Length: 258
Image 1 (spheres, rainbow, N blue to C red):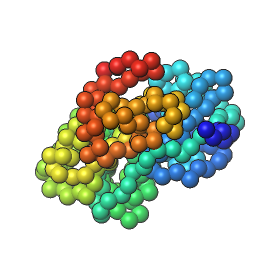
Image 2: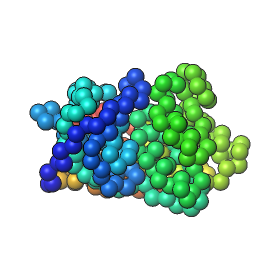
Image 3: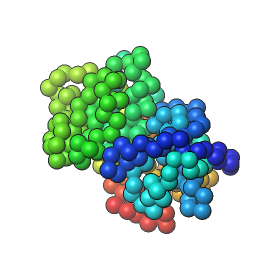
Image 4: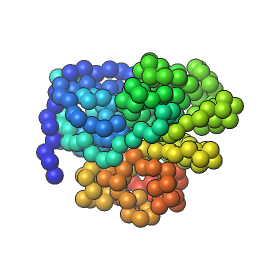
């Protein structure tokens, strides 16, 4: 296992009340959708998707992410990676569906692909303040914003807006990419299959090594590991984990969490 690269935090950007972006003093040659293992000395090591060559966005949801949020500019962290599979562009028109912190790997893909491909993005958040990277998405193409509380844009789910776009606007897409809450992504896949559009999904699971050794992130079915066989899967690969996808995952002890 490779040693982490020690990086200094150059800048911290507060994206929302719960999300911060950490900009580092070193760049990494990653492909959109890949991740790195972030190490805080004496705390732990966890996986996070790249937002750019030198930045990661982190939602505060537990002990590790709270410790990360408490770091200051000038503090040091370790970075291992990039690891895993990536989003792969197909055709000339792509629909991106992003929810919450799942917007982090999607924005890197959208910015990368928009140079040669027409991009439409559906961006979801609980509130207006939780719509991440809105300005960056708008620069890459058409953007539809959705909020749970109706404080901005469409009042409802991203998947409802997605089906409305596919149905009423007669949009033709060559590919759909998505990342966000798994129950949202399961619905995205169902809609994509309904309209016979290829789909790529970025999954998240509990990881320890990040390189396929420990098996902690294996998903039920064919023994696929999210760290090396994913995190980005094509829709037809999800048939191997159809019992688990969108229904449950396993925590650090291996116990099922709905």
